[in-house]
Image (cartoon, rainbow, N blue to C red):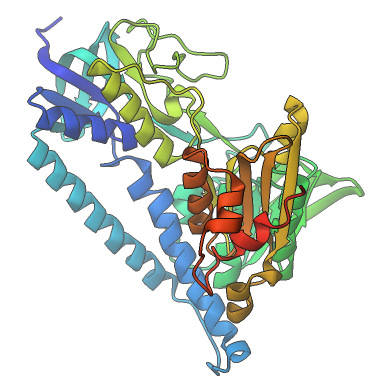
Length: 463
């Protein structure tokens, strides 16, 4: 084997945790290299979080234009130019990539574009995108390879060449009828987005309800506004087979509670979960073990089974959000500096960017029942929030869980406009250990804002 180029820090994958680690270590004077197969900065700025929210916003503009008369504005006929939608998204992505490249240059970390594979402990062979190979080794190695859309075991699905979120965000035309397989967060965001652009949309969910991890009232509230916009939602429905070619004509044979049915569509989108990008990268040669689900096995310090090798983000089984992989970076960074930081007990928020949004942090009612935790529940319909009334955005509700015998906030969920921003207020109170009564009785909340509804919500908590 050729002599390896040696680095202090070697990182495989440039996602949220990987790139932050590279920039931090580079600025700290460590000789640092990042191997990235394709997407500079990882999925979030290229094919996931930010591009999807960019197009979701374009769809909201189209939705508002079509409903302008409701607000006293007559717009006439409204059409969507998907080429322009895509170009707006691409321009943003190009700007984000340029920012990332400037950060690499400023930090001194080296970005190497190619396919990396472990060939020994802390040693990676890279097939460079522009030809040739390099052999790299590191004193410390970080793995941040992310995840990808799962392909369900359905006869005919691979031959149909279905869309994933990547291809769905690159379409330059409007699907006549988009069939979405999966009723999770990604599927629902894209389903509503294409419905607002003008597509007919059918969502097929194998489980008994959309978003099976959410409380039933949350799932029902989301389903209600999707159905109101004209989206067909099939629950407890299994796809038996798929025929045809996505982008031309595709038929999904499904088994519903009322019997078999054939759904004719133009395009089919896979949104039925994700799998870790851990195969084919030589982890066994590196001494890195996987768990039964195919994720890298790590402890609560994100250390793998191999000495001086860490894993961050999706591939390590962390909750699949960019803000979590960025916190994974902080855990490893601080521990390398002599700290004692852990992933245990993290208060992880999330938001689904449908319109209205779904936001959640902490404990849910379902989790409280399962864990035997006694709680008090306060709930407020959005139609009781003055700001929601002014904007005609009254779908959904706020819900808070408080300890049965204490005033500590244990969880918060909101289905409503600006839910992600309102949730952050509650999250800060939870991090501070603040009793809910401080928001109810002391906080002066600006009128009229969505967050003002928190005062009314906390007033609903039983004594």
